[in-house]
Image (cartoon, rainbow, N blue to C red; front, side):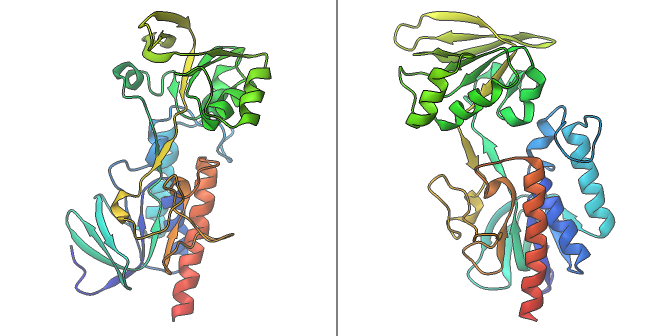
Length: 312
């Protein structure tokens, strides 16, 4: 797949909202742009049934429909696509080298938009009902549980924040934690304890998600100390045990924070290596929304083009 020494102006790694937006902006700036989609073209949104919070759609749109529209737009403006997986990159000098299964490609600039994966417990039932009552994003899906009961699994700040957010919609929120004390910060733990809609389920782990063809109907919880089982009726389950940025292929060549998210300069998508930019959930541990991912993707596309202009 080698381009015989010809380096693309921009290579975008990742095919979610951040990657598509980055490609659209780079192409429209007149840059030869190649997007490598990876294992999951469209990113996490391809597993989301309905999207109601992406601006511009008066009626709900499915995640796959939204991603298909973004890809078609990127194709229309002139983005080249490669349906392959990046195995490694060499960022030691420009042009950068990107190794995929079909060969090697060179890039004058790189935009990393590989996203982050929500951590799941690995239960078969959890995967069975994923997108049908099991979610890892309260701000994405909380609206669908208005006046319903939900369970949040976890004990850190993420779980506490998800539980508190869900009280804006759900009638009751069960926060399930394997210990008798939250790992969350003191202020978040206090907010959880003081909230009238949140019921703690201490010393419990999720043993199984229960449901039918219509979706989730409850959870089976287990006390790890005694193996005692408790059945709990809920309409939804939110897994809040953290996210893992998709950066293994970088082999430590870019600086990350303690959680593994790529560090970018303030008010910029520039990473620790000049000419390499990062956008979307791979560098955003706070918002993790499609619209913010697309926004930082646009920033990366603009910054990559400006960098090339400055380089002459």
